[in-house]
Length: 239
Image 1: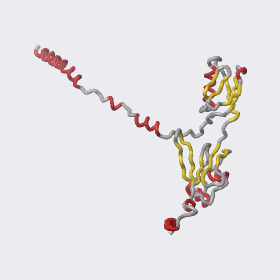
Image 2: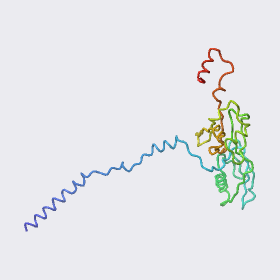
Image 3: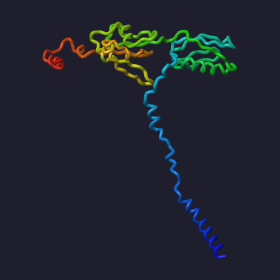
Image 4: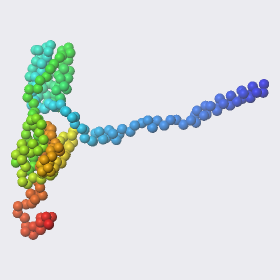
């Protein structure tokens, strides 16, 4: 009997102590599972967005294209993008398409005609569009904008522009390339070394929109007429 009473007393004390133990148990730290994405988000907003390796052509004002409807040929039409980026679709109205690729344009027009046609099937053919180009500037014979046809390297681009002038600094030719919205990638190419050694492995291929800039060498920056008192300033670095 005594042992039974002792057992009951033990379990009673255990039941009284259990809620207190549960209350005193520290809660798990939820902050350990929270991922701080503020720095990542900030970097994605301020850092350069890398371009696609093979980017699709982006429509610009002045581009022309044909729209064909497989099941509704009465809506077939030829369109030209207006200066404000809009086109006027027959039976639908104005739709903004500048800045889109051809696949995106297809979806935009399908969505527009989906209001009056049941699941339209369309095809788009570009007729007149901005040709790929590159720009050469600086110390070249004919600086300007040139059509990009086939594979063209930096040295070939310089040749197209009439070659470099005697005042050119061949060892620091700059290649500017768009890397994303608001960002430009700059490469320095030692064309002088490439041509001297006959090693064109570093002769980069031009991409649409690239700009090649040839700076002046140090001596070409000297003015033709300078005060005689300042001649020593120009001669000292050459000694």
